[in-house]
Image (cartoon, rainbow, N blue to C red; front, side, top):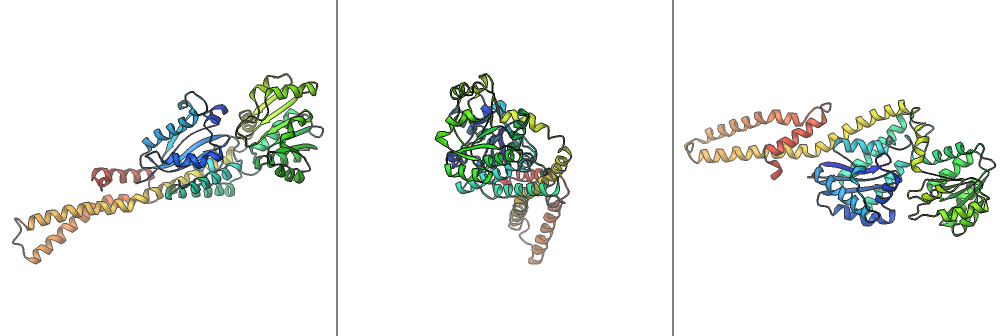
Length: 428
């Protein structure tokens, strides 16, 4: 029976960006990858999370040990398609209550690079929906993810962790403000007009950017965003010739390949007479060639560089995060009790049946042998006596299973597992 939750993956703390990229799953690839994940024998349900900061597999299984091994193999296979090298040193694994806690913390943005950023919840919902459409979500993960959404909502409403929240997009703009002494005389090019691009553009506008060029593979989206924030739309195929006008280039395109390489920037710098130029790369996959940073008067920052900016916000949110952690802890207990309850009733039923089978066989053997001369009244008394004995013997273990909600959740799970093992109930 599926009864365990396992999470295996890597994030911005356990692996550098180039390793995360090598394991990332593009949206177009998820529909193929999800059924392949569930083809592993121990994986009964599965969801793949793949963002710029994390790649994780969330699975429901009957054997967490085997599942961890199989998910690691799944991720290693994904990496092998792109680059050689070990993955084990970057991977973490959680199971049971710790896995539940991890997902709840992710949903509540307690595990994000910037604590309190709201984007992760939308991403979780997106990947859950993808798994649903692929048919890899069942009862366990359906309940787990919907509970994580509720936990995130509760954290937002009961703490101040979301007030003045700083998303990755606002951190990028904050970094740009540190780079330039003033914004109103600078020109910015934004590559990508999706959700992240929209957020970046609005943050830039709030902080006084007057000249903003926007380009996107779908030109209509660039036009729409430009109209909303009084920017200038640029056709995607034309943006390289406008680079020379930009003091700051921010990349947040959902692209699987590098959009700007060092050769292009070298040419642009000559046209700019080597006037300083800054690049900030916050795409799910890196939009800018890392070699850009080797050029004179060119400065490139990527997702990992934003960590230092994000850390400035951590202390301010420490108290609110502590309250959020308490909420998560409460919700984990509730969910673990629900998981345990899935086996509570069938375990009690199976245990009663096992004792009843033994009682019935022994009575039949006795009344067919040494007790064959018993009267109907005596046989009825024997039935009542042995039934009462069974009920008394089972009273304490069944009471333990029907534990008080305030008891240790792990004890309840251990009792169920022990009873099923000791009395061979798993075989039934």
